[in-house]
Image 1 (cartoon, rainbow, N blue to C red):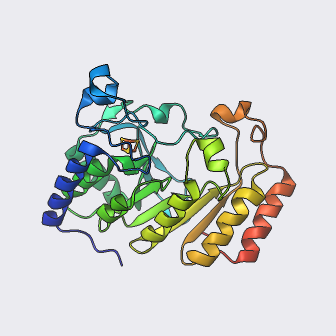
Image 2: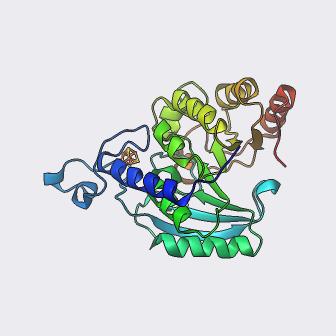
Length: 289
Ligand code: SF4
């Protein structure tokens, strides 16, 4: 059961999260860059290689808006987009803007906490932190939680490629994970998003998240990826995380580089959509509304 952290617990977590930035292993790329040394992040020759995500110790937000287009149990949902991502999904609908680590407005935790409380006061049910990849902004999320007078209904809308320490640090802060399970156990994570060990990392993290918070898993069905991605993802969920809500997304559009990637450069056929629905129905997954 979710129990919100106290202010003193949050203060300790913030201190630890800030220390973690000095040798960043917030995601499983574990590049170890010092994100507090902004020269390193810019790629100055004297400071070594920049991190793949390009992030330093600041968080920028490139968009905030209320959404009525999420799962019913989330609505209304306040969408908060943090810049910077560790994935390069060829079909990303937010690309390339979401990759920019310093696009938009720098987040000031006190202002963000005030803004989030304001929208919650007006009826927002969830604060939907996304990006980019929000888990790489662990320190900022903790600072926003600490700046709020009341616990906020924070939901982490994530690719779930963080290290286990991040999930531990968000325990008592994030009450809901909105988790993308994008690819199956084959090579699709590597070929379509540039990510190694995708399945191993994400399924491990889904289990860890499910021990600490509610989990809603989404799968965007890609054309030609029913047997390699949808089926194993759905079967894994049915066997390992049956209490999680599941959303089958069949509205795939070939965005960004998908348009020039053979195989995923088209929408789903009706036959593929029906087959996806059949697989999920037969497994009895707990569908979200
Ligand atoms: S979050 Fe960025 S800096 Fe940290 S390990 Fe991942 S890629 Fe490296």
